[in-house]
Length: 161
Image (cartoon, rainbow, N blue to C red):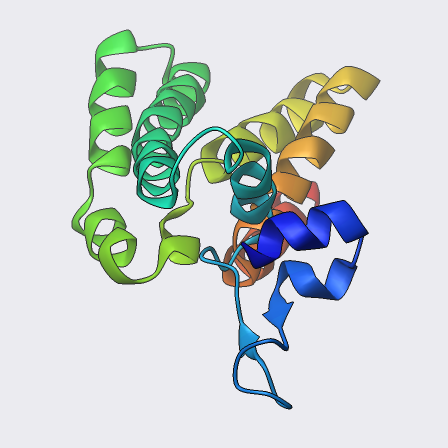
């Protein structure tokens, strides 16, 4: 595969662009549009087939997203029943299903509630630990989808304001 060749030759442009097809213009060769999923694909492609990796990453968006929404609502309301329902509603929303079928980058919503949670913890509780964790989740949101980066940037600005 071209991706394995790019890893072996340390050709960074070959990770996302392949000049071997449709020469001289080339073609986008990565099966995933987001940087986070591309990195996981490159790590797992030695062991698993593409369809298995896609399925694992798609299922993880539901599991991690539900857990993040649960923790966010539990922090805000201190009600575990409301948090459980919020996690289910967030993870299994029609938007998430419909985006996941066609646009995998837009399906990677799992880091949004974690980022929101630690941004709110940073404002309410302070501390370097919460700020660093919020920053890590902000980077994960940015690596997942640029549209969500803009939304999370607006949210972060409003929370910090």
